[in-house]
Each structure stands twice: as structure tokens, then as C-alpha cells.
Length: 133
Image 1 (cartoon, one colour):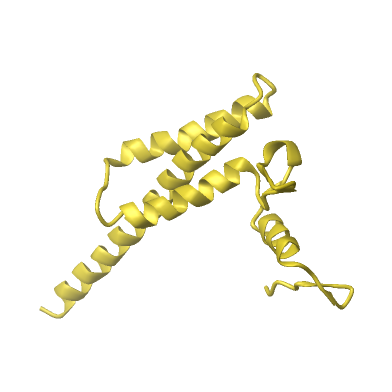
Image 2: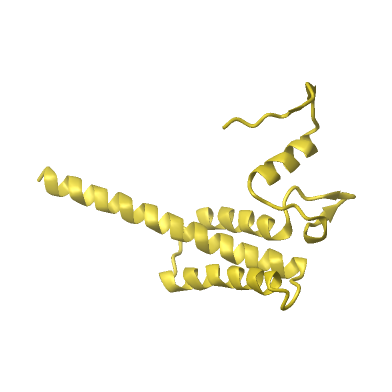
């Protein structure tokens, strides 16, 4: 699927493109749950911004340091519980808490993804080694 950055045959601004990409990524973009910088809201909410930061950190750190899988599962659960508490109207989350749980969840989920890919690659290499030896 291709992203269309035109609005009634008019080229839209870079900021509007970022908003579109944020919406396209699945973010609700609620203003009260987004950071505001110089009068403009971020293209994604604070939790999504945290998830994106966590993704980037995971890709950088994965090569150097890996914890046991249970810690990453707990990290994903932390973000889910924060979302669930807010969704059930038990307690409203703050933007700082959304950002922190987003970073933890994004880092954890991306690391689980990287671990899965690593296991698949190692399994394929082992199969090839077995077939050709």
C-alpha cells in the first residue's frame, strides 16, 4: 500500500505528512495524550513515541546485551497493564508514565522479535549444516 501525500492535488506540509504517518502507524493521536512542542502536537501520542524510542534502543542494544526472556515478557506486560488500567477507567495515566511504559514495552517487544529472528536464523543454519555435512 502506498502512502499518498497529496490533499486535493495540493502538496501538504512536512508536519502534515508526519501526522499522516503517525495515524497510518495506528496511533490514535489524541491531543491530551501527546506532547506539544512549539505549539504543535507530536505526530504520535506519548506511548507510541515511547514505543518508537524503545524500538530504536532495542536494535542498538540487542547486539551487546540480552537479558533472560522473562524480563522482556514482564516489560510487555508493564505497558499492557498501564494501558488496561486506563482503559478500564481505574486510573488515568500521565504522559510521563505513558512514555516510560511505552519505552519499556517497545524495547521488550522489539527484543523478543530480534530473539525470534536470531533463533530462526540459527535453526536454518543448523539445518543447512546437517544437510550438507
